[in-house]
Amino acid sequence: MKKIKILYLIPSLGSGGTEKHLYQLVENLDKNRFEVFVVCLSDYSDSYVYDDYLKNIDIKVHYFSIYKKRNLFKLILFINKKRIDVLHSLSYAPIVYDVIFYLFSKAKKLITVRRNMQHHRGELLKLKWFERFRNYFTSLIIANSNEVGKFAINLEGFDKGKLKTIFNGIDLKTRYDEKGINRVKQKISYKDDDFIISNIANIKPVKRQKDLVRLIALLHDIKYKLILVGREDDGYGGIVRGLIKELKLENRVYILPYTKNIEDILNISTIMVMSSFAEGFPNSILEAYKYNVPVIATNVGGNKELVNDQTGFLVDSKSSSQFLDKIVYVLSNKSKFETITNNAFTHIQQYDWKIVGKKYLDLYHKLLE
Image 1 (cartoon, rainbow, N blue to C red):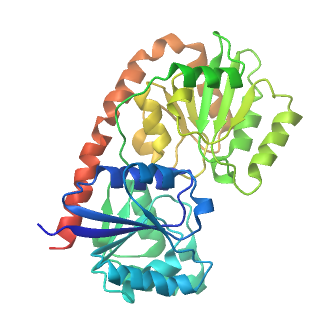
Image 2: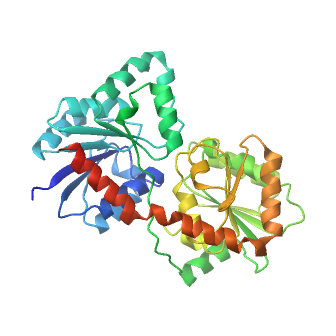
């Protein structure tokens, strides 16, 4: 059987949900049926995390930085030389490039994705015409949640027949590393009676860690520690650090850099909170459920498809008091949440990568029929 050749196009391979999704997708594809190429549109310096992950599963990353314009032509030649069947653009960022690579190459199909509800290019008149042009030539658009799909159709106006929703997947195997857990405990001066609140998200304005720190400062009667884990973007991390110092929360709130071993934090977490004002389909909620950690999340995007009264709590993204009330309720009634955590783990069985990976396998074959 002739292998299907797929080229995944991604802006960078640093830390983030899209990068992790690519790695999991590639890892779970049947290598006897697919030949995989990964192209990164930035330099290696921006790809320190998942480049190593991909090397470990024998996938070489090809770098064509878009900051060097000659690379645009080189990539088209590369696509043709490798006789790519499917060009799968895995981020909204390469909008100006992926359709050009497709039209000027011999690739048979172009897949683009919508993974969040933050893109607003369709609202800009100077790009609206290009958006429609790109979507016209796109073979298939994949959304990672129903909410993201509806948002994209309303914003961009493309035919809903071009849209396919495939939720993010998760490896259901759990990991417990006592040494790793102890390192986290040392970093936060952990005490046995601490309530650990985790927020696993890149530290940037859309994730609202600054608002979360202000909110958490109002918890006076509960012995808690808040752990913020993620890559710090565009100076926002410095702003959050300044606020922590201003509110004298240095012994309560900790910013930890991105770690490959998120489970070391989840293994000691009492709850996980998601304070974002926009989300697609957060991998971190799936990870929390895997480790029986209840979730309090804002009622935005794909959060409402993952979190319900059987698996956690949804709160109004504009209501600080509602958010705080739920945090206090969970921390004051920890013993009552065995049912919720069991429901959460049961809920994520449908997102097992064995199931999600098969959906992609079937999709690629059907697209090329």
